[in-house]
Length: 144
Image (tube, rainbow, N blue to C red; front, side, top):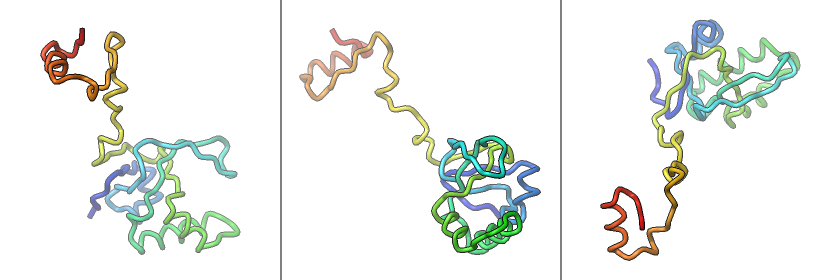
C-alpha cells in the first residue's frame, strides 16, 4: 500500500534493493521534486539527491531507517539520526530513483510576471482607468 504524499520519488531497482523493506510500494515522500547536491565523507564526489520528508513517515519506517543506518556507520547515535529524519535532513540519492511527482505543480511553475515577452512592458493595472483595462484586454494585451 502506498501513501498519498504531496511530493514523492519512486525507487528504481537499486533503490528497492536498499530500501524496499521500508518503502515496499517504491514511493518515498520528499520535500521537493527539485534535487539538492550533498557531500558526505564516504563519497568521492557530491551527489544529487531529494530530501526525505520525515514527517510523512510512520514510526515503523523511522525505526527501520535508523536500524539500516546504524549498520552502515561507526559511532552512530540513534537519537541524532531520528532528529535528522524528522527535520528532513536525509538525502535520497537521485541515482536510486526513477522519477518524482507532486500534487503541488503550482510550486514548480514560473510566476506569470516572469514570462513577459520582450515586447511587452509590465504595467501595474491598479493605476489604469477601467476603459484602459478593457482596451488592453480587447487588444490582446497591447497597450497604446
